[in-house]
Image 1: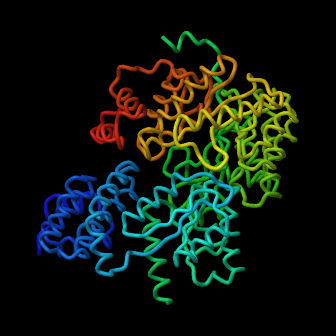
Image 2: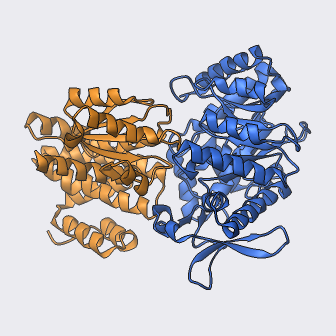
Image 3: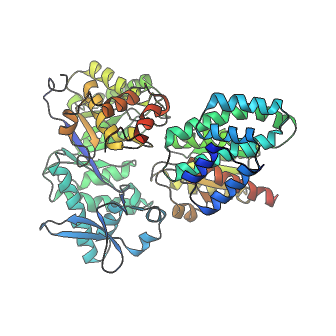
Length: 248
Length: 346
């Protein structure tokens, strides 16, 4: 395949300015079949009905679920992430795209799990002790599930021992902690310390985020990564999952 | 019109002296100074134009590299430093921020230093310093704002209350001890709709939480007229029902308690994640006044209450924003389409 459909060509031209990202996505779209390109394009605009229908059609045409995931759904979501980062689209539009992604995944996932293919990874998510805010955390969870992660949501006001218990029960290698308040942020560090005390720190990768959290704060409490929004959270979860798999 | 039949004063709790506040590096208040550093413009007490210089350590921070200057945080840190020139610069800068809000009609000045440090002793020292610095020049009372009760207590202890009784921002069911602070320091309170174990998910939970908290406040002898209820505003970008949840709770609380209780809210939260926030904020303030608020925690410099009162409700931008805020525009699609076509005005 050498041609990219007009819609995606426009997306690349108008919205994907960074040369490395432009080249990478162009490569993916050139490799992708017209049907996959169509799925990616509809996904960018959050057209749930079309993504739903075309994903079903692709499976009926014997596309492998991995190809649908990589060349259609994830490729489309990559464009959404870039546009959001660059302030070209806004939160509601990311949510519509996530909803369309979910519709596509609903067809693909059962086949992936039946064939023994692993999900993107397993993540434990929670707002830390003393903090009741969950809007940002819930956005992250929505995006993570959209990207094929299994997410166990511990809700708000999550104590360190609840994080530890969940990690052990679900065998999850990645923990995401959220805090909105400056006064509850230190509980992220305390949770990591509790994992240390339990002898579990080295097996787990911690990612942190929330309104007042910064890269500098994440480094200070010895977290493994910081994400500034839900899109960054997904990238980080992928990276930390890969790191923990290399280690095993 | 409803707006004109309610002549009582509108209680603006000016929210600009908050350590999270940013100005954009490319915005018109920021200038590159002679030594190559960046500075944020302000007018000092003598009327002279000056610049709050961004210290080198801030240039390494992520916020700065993403194009944002945490100007209030910088000014507070300068204020509590040991360098007397920096102290003077921080003091003058924050007093200028205070004056701008006072001139714009604020009734209280909200002070929040939570983000200045993650250490409680530093946060308390910052609150002490900030309260002392602002109350010396302010003809209006302060609103002491923190998510930590000990920081609230520190601020209240420092208040001389010369300009009036202070406000506590805020009391919630999960921090019921803040009501005792209100008694001890004879303060007014903002009472929020947060629950004991989580944020409210709808109108009913907001109302139930508020009623329980108001009951607890009255049981401690706090007068209705000293309670400012904030049912909590969440972003419309995340859920198209978020505007209604707040507005309907305001209506119900007003009906239940009558004219004496105050109703307020952090209204600009509603516009998080969508463009042209000024339009959305002003439209939401107008809708909330209809519903029964008599005050807001807001930026009085950006959003002028007189402009809100005279907003043209027949204009297309107003109607698009109002439809979105009333839950009639799923995923804000019509609003965002109009924004892209340039139909929302400036």
